[in-house]
Length: 315
View 1 (spheres, rainbow, N blue to C red):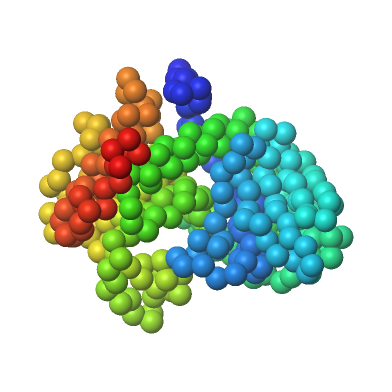
View 2: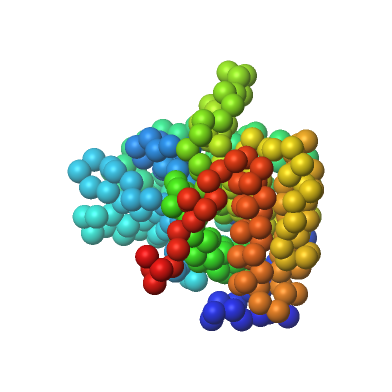
């Protein structure tokens, strides 16, 4: 049963019902994400390559191109891909069941060429698997991924929109450096991260460039993903880096939240279905974010009170 919270609808989202569509959508987003990676100026922790949630779906940052700029919009209301430029040009095509990743790749690059935006990307999936098997073929050869369940794509975006609002509310409680709520297209999760300003442990050069930049400083991160091959249902998560000793002994809220092992470190989980069972999902998610933050911040020695941002009425 759907629940209405602050005029937002929280739908059910069963992974088995749209898993192939989820993989296809993830690959679409990787194509567009790599376009953004090629064009956007460098920003710390890869925030220059993420996608943002808006009132239609997901959108890129405003990207530079020649003497104009442009945006690429995934419109999950009308199920279209839209490219809009600052000099008034507009191109679109339908997102539809049967549109293979190969065809999506060809269509988006045909539009970019038409708009005189000529770029090169590494046109292969990044860290994608299907039933445990790596997806490594070039985008232009991925004809087998062609499922687009518009109902479930819309449900996924509804959850992202609701989650983004609550992440923004939570971020306003903290004076320190905080990322915007943003969708990382490599693993299809929306995340928001807090930093205390301390450098993290230096990762070896055997680590990927992406990880060395992402984990350059101590952080506590929060996110949502719709399930994957290991966790077969949608969930909210939080983890602290570096992970302190005894983190999994700290209390989490609501009561349905739990600590699980994630590659040898504790990760806080709140299953999405458990959130739907809460009387007030809005409050329950904020409680989860706050309790998992305080758990990590206390054990890492962050200045919890000094970073606490009071309501305007108390300033």
